[in-house]
Structures are given as C-alpha cells and as structure tokens.
Image (cartoon, rainbow, N blue to C red; front, side):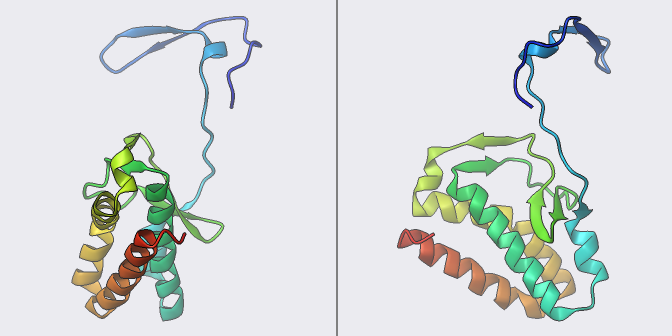
Length: 152
C-alpha cells in the first residue's frame, strides 16, 4: 500500500526491548502478502515426479528473476521456510534481507548468487533425491549460458 494522507492519529508501538516508536501511518508503506504453501512441504508430500521437476524449475526461475533484477537475498542460510508456492509458482516469503547489488550484472556475480540461492535445494536433493542433482545442475547451466548471451 502506498503512502497516504488519510490517518488522523499516530500509533505507538513497543518492541520486545521496550523501546516505544511513535508512528505516523501516513508516512509508512505496507507490503501485503497472500498466504501460500511452504515450498519444501509441498515438494516432500508429492509423489508425482513430473511435478517435482516442475517445482525445481519454478524455484530456479524464481531465483533467476530476482537475480536479474540485481537483488541479493542475504537470508539464504539454512531456512527452508523462506519460499512458498503461490498460484503453483515458487515465491519468496521473507524479503527482509534483500538488497540491490550491481555486481549481479556480471556473469561472475550472477552465477555466485544463483549458486548461493540454490544451495539449500541442492543439499536437500543430495540428501534425499541425488538422482535429481544432474537435472538441477543442467538447468542452472542453462541459466548461466542465457545470462552470458544476454537472452532472458
């Protein structure tokens, strides 16, 4: 939601440390999120192999679309709950540690972010479905080739 001029009263909010913030809601923008299913929960529950391949492709497409916009996700870590499925497409749920970085314009920067962002998925596949690692790697390689030839 965009900044507006409709709220008459200010709101006081206290954080867990007791610090009080006096907020003018007219000067704050809001991001609304729709509820979605957790990516890995859906992936683990499905027995349809074609759908699993589709989910891997969708995950890669999500990461690619973010990365080509020069946005780094610095909250990759080990959390498997940061991604979901909305309208049957992979989406990021937690964008709290995203930031813009022009280094992603370079093939090396793009590749580094794509590899970092798919590390958890790769580890999951290595531990649970190692036969899908080649599928993941082949698709990553396609994205790298497309990036280097500037075909999106």
